[in-house]
Image (cartoon, rainbow, N blue to C red; front, side, top):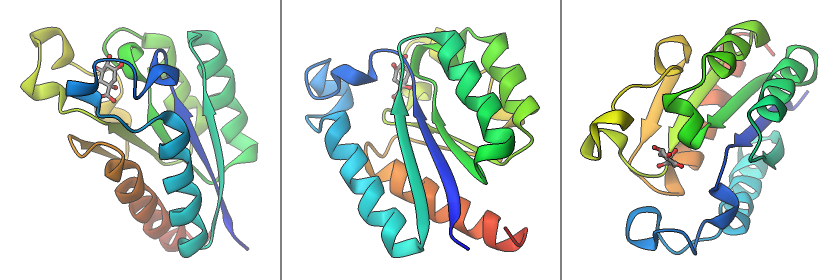
Length: 149
Ligand code: DQA
């Protein structure tokens, strides 16, 4: 059976393409979603792609992954650097979570160098713009295949 993968996007990513294009590029979130849909199809994954500006909604969606998903791709955006609640939800979902960033936070301001998610994630992909989501889908397909899901 196809693995169900939840792709979660945090605050301000709805403005992708408009927001700081010199950092995040000109692709919109719709373009990223389309890339994920194509890649997911090629890998035999079912993709559920969502975005929220609200921390609690992201927490609720991660909780849903306990029973509703086989793995999660998470770009928590600014909450990456601030949110204990999202870290706790990553642990609580008991599913492999891959952290993704479009930019490379380590080449940016110091406050972006700490992630509350990285050490509890299955892996981290950053700095490759929308391509990073495709790489994460490849990785999660391997992980879900290994665990027999
Ligand atoms: C981001 C990096 C974060 O530091 C930032 O707050 C974002 C986007 C990225 O995808 O590069 O909103 O997660």
